[in-house]
Image (cartoon, rainbow, N blue to C red; front, side, top):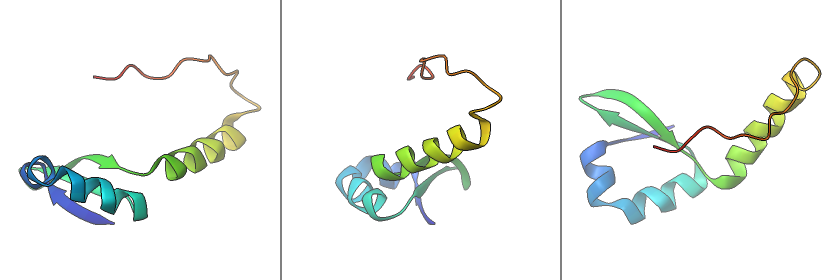
Length: 68
């Protein structure tokens, strides 16, 4: 997984988007990863995997976490 500082992500947002389409990018603040940016396709894939693993034990709520 590639990494990028928060400052670089801000200053080169287009590059961040292009890179995240190909592979997840960890954004670091003060040298520590704080978020990961990934493509919609990868997000959907991970979501499906999670639903398959937990689908029989948890009923879907239809709610997504609130964006900040």
